[in-house]
Length: 603
Image (cartoon, rainbow, N blue to C red):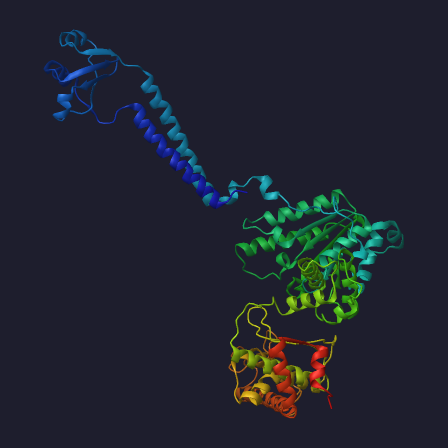
């Protein structure tokens, strides 16, 4: 495709060629330092003996002055137009001056060079015009070119056995597979299979893989394109590419058309758009037309994926277009275990590997995260020259993905290490002793990532609902590190800044979203964008400053209660706190068995 930067480079190149042609023309014509004089004056110079050589033609006489004449100020050449009736030869012979004929080649060189100069000038003008008018410079092939190809060709077949953790989504899409295999069965019953299905879910949950699996199970061509591939700065390009995509699919029906990141072209339309917005809206309009322009009996099924369904245009989601929305959500523990088993087929695992335990340690992970964990573990095993991937490599891989790369060479001040040791020990003790405790898996003061000087890891369960007392336990755990610093050193450090931020956010949600305040009552206080109300936030005027003050007072009350509870828990176990901090300073990290041995009975 022609671009403005390419046009600039070509224009600069042509200007350089133009300058070189001018220089060659000047040198080829041999007229540098010449002076045109009347023919009579030239004859006077010849008579005085100021000329040493003459070249003549029917239209021009060139005379080269002598060295003495040039030293006196004469040019390198005199040029004159001869009188047709006059004969210069006798005068030249009387002065013994060398003379000869003047070839016409010089004139022809000038003509050719002049033509080349003109041609170069025209090229520069055309390139400059194209630079300012890029749309007109594009050929029809460029404007309509589509990058989508049949992705099922020359690709290993992907079936539903390659997809795990999304059983409900697979069941929703099995109807499409059955229709593509046997459309006549549906036609006999008068059933209309959805024209399109929208796969909705967070990034990395396997939406694209699921679409490929549908095509693989049905054994039909799979045309895939990203939403961003349709959009260009040139108005009309996206609409042309949409038409081309559906033309290709119809030519090979039955087939599946898959559009990834549909939100790139399917955002809700707004009036008054200009520039790129106009192009995006034209592309969306063309997509709507194409969805209306075919019947599902034609054998074309449109699948699309997005993680921002809330911003899509309503016209896309109405019946007859994307009839069905399929949720591809984050997997639960069982789903994560199934995903790990799928990805583990390519990895040589040791006999002691417990993938179910790995699944429990990775709540919130999606398929892409779990694949990354196994890959990182395999890399660690290869680096350590292991014969197979074991649990130590899997634990290290999870730590690396969750917390960051271990920074063994980072120098930490002795005093800082002690503060971090007490801080992380405080988190761990409060977490293990809380009523709704999630088991502590590991405590470490080895720096990881960009900012983590230490960390405490738990093995949380998949939960959809939390009660007020469980949220208060989480607040106490977050503030346990700050409470340990207060007990051990009598003052606070800056290391608890992230804990305070997370605790304040959770406390504010308890008041503003969950209505967990007996003073304010069961009321939700949120801004238009769904965020909880913050102190000093002027984006909403739905409640008064007095109400805002009461909210902040309640948030502060929750945090104070949680901090006092953590302080009380650690004060009763001061000896355990000291022992655990000393063990962390000596070892760097504690696994669960070592941690429980120091903690002792929890009662």
